[in-house]
Image 1 (cartoon, rainbow, N blue to C red):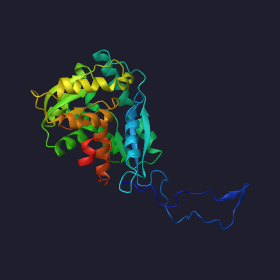
Image 2 (image 1 turned 90 degrees about the vertical axis):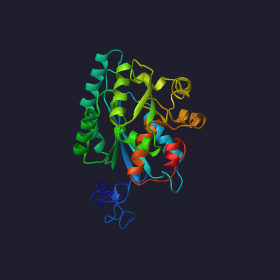
Image 3 (image 1 turned 60 degrees about the horizontal axis):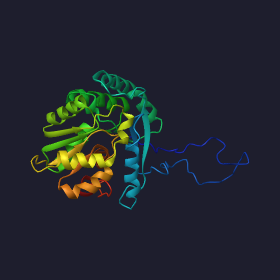
Image 4 (image 1 turned 180 degrees about the horizontal axis):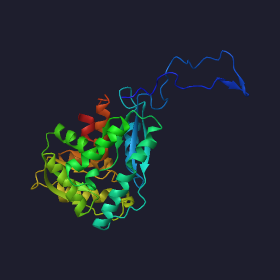
Length: 293
């Protein structure tokens, strides 16, 4: 964990505080021997890396921060978001998916270097890598490269999701995604390699990465109730992938009704990042995962 508040922080020019362009003698107020924290992110500044088409994840994480501002909550926790440029977000064919993978992976380091300018203390990878990469080792490799390149700890879905599932003792899972057939196959492969049984997977087959944010909540609810959380499937949990597909409202509405946890990727990633950084208080607005563990 880097010390981003080493004095002098903030560093002042030689003139110090000025009034009408002239130095103010003996103003005080900012001691050069003290490292003052970021006024808004004084407890932790998270870097968040997102595809440029993602309009959902940052909103969901800030909503959790604002809903949990109590003394033991998330007051003083902030996000600094940087985007990976993905100029061709079409996802109609398998070749489109491979092109999107090339765009995203090719732009990751540049986005991380840009995020580093704000001196984050911990990073969150806001991308379901299992969508574009087949096999657990293929997913782990770019994250390991990012960890070494940045020198920071990272929350990534291939670590956050199994950690969350194991809290519930879940083994039989159903997947809900915005992906097409290949994307769902990649996602299922990751969870199988992690030791879980993927009983069923539902994908909305979004043909454009931007459009994922436009899937209506009622469609997500219908998929959960009618295609996944059925008696014959005997699921231990429902897992949602695809960080641009918001799920907090659906999770809050349906978890009690279906009797099993619903683990949205955004909530799981933020839960993992918070717990890795010592924020262990129960939180509201993010489903059972954040309130119970």
